[in-house]
Image (cartoon, rainbow over all chains, first blue to last red):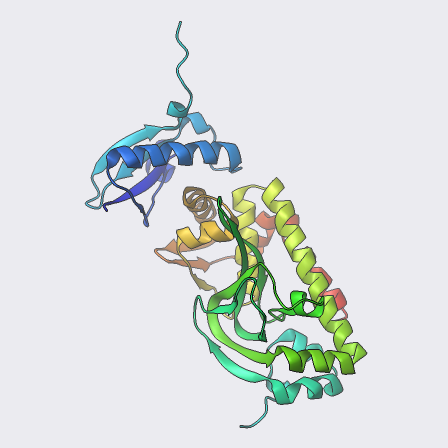
Length: 84
Length: 237
């Protein structure tokens, strides 16, 4: 299975990316995206930290083994959009 | 084989024993190399041996369907297996494995129990170390419920440093997340945060402590309670 790296963007600039050097094995980019949403949900609910000012401004910049951007998952995507 | 001499011991519990109490244990202490991840106590199985860490330390973890988390750290201040055995049972649901490689002095459970039955002062000292373990676990519960991930990481690094002779720790973020009871991404955030304040230096699979005093300031009252109780109860500070 390919390995995906869940780099966490918590503010703009180079200091605002928590680089994932270890990664997780997942079937494909869609599975990586689903995993990222689970992670985001858990982190918002359970992680108290001073480095993140606004969880809703965070995103996972998911890269593949070659270092290329596979997909981006915004933390805001865990909230269903309200119509109207 | 020559016996281990008390003057050469690093384990603080063994050092704190009277010469008479040490002599009860001495013939039974066997030096054992303890490689990384080596299992010391298997959950829910009879405990055949206990371990006095000399170099390196042991991690106690508990697990369930939702994951696994560290609930205790035992190094040269303690005795791995003391809680279940001294409190009257031959097994524990918790996993105990080597978190930092080194050397421990093993002792057969029967030999330890015999010595404890012979000496009230030995039993008292070892039971006091169990009390310190309980305080440490309670403190972990408290800070996990209350404090930021940065404070939790700072405290954990200080606890490791207390049980090591160097400032460098070999650990992946995956494993760190297990120790802190959090997601790997949260562990990575905490590492980045402490590194941003120049308290630690992180490279892949390694964390180096740069400033112990500043780490203590970050950890604040999250760190130090079991350590102070240890000094009071075991070393008579």
